[in-house]
Amino acid sequence: MLKKLRKYMHFDWEGFVENKKLVLLGIRDWKDFNTGRELGVKAECVIAMDKTDYGEAGVNNLYEKIMVKIPHKINIPIGKEIELRNVQAKVYGDYGNQLSVIAEDIQPVSTK
Image (tube, rainbow, N blue to C red; front, side, top):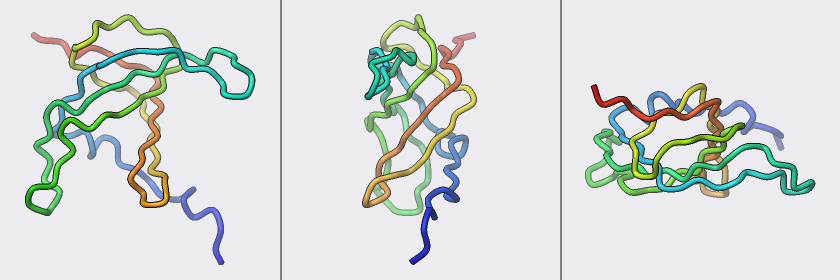
């Protein structure tokens, strides 16, 4: 049996968030499970708009939540539309329906 195949699975974050709007729901501390050392924050986001064509009628991810790990503190108001910078995302889980997301930064979307 082949091993470590998931290591080679690429998740296209930019393609995934295209035609979507992410909104910040909450922020909490991100700590190392074993040591308790503070690593940054976890930002809970929701997909507030999903106009993605998934190739199947009635399929979308509207109102699905995404937890994003960020390696520093952030100061963004809850309810604000956000964008993530330099994202590393991986699909995991028995059914490939879980998403692990780490972003270098998170920024509010400017309303010019």
